[in-house]
Image (tube, rainbow, N blue to C red; front, side, top):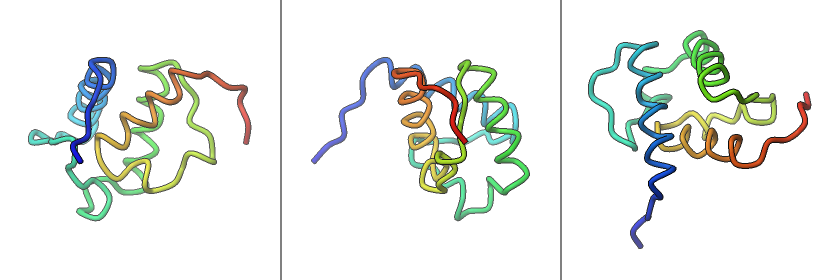
Length: 93
């Protein structure tokens, strides 16, 4: 089954990719680029990425969102950001 993405999700994905390029200097990204298992994204760079995404999208990434699956690929990150921007919730820790 093919995964269909909306233009809004593509826009978020493009912005996530820009954040990854700015922060990590990655030049070749696909939606499925493995960020975690490849070692591109480590704990220190993840903290920087979270801060950059929170500023860029005016969202809050809570402790409950810190599942590695949410950071596995640019597409996973775009889904997390999309969920945060679609339904803002009260901050919880």
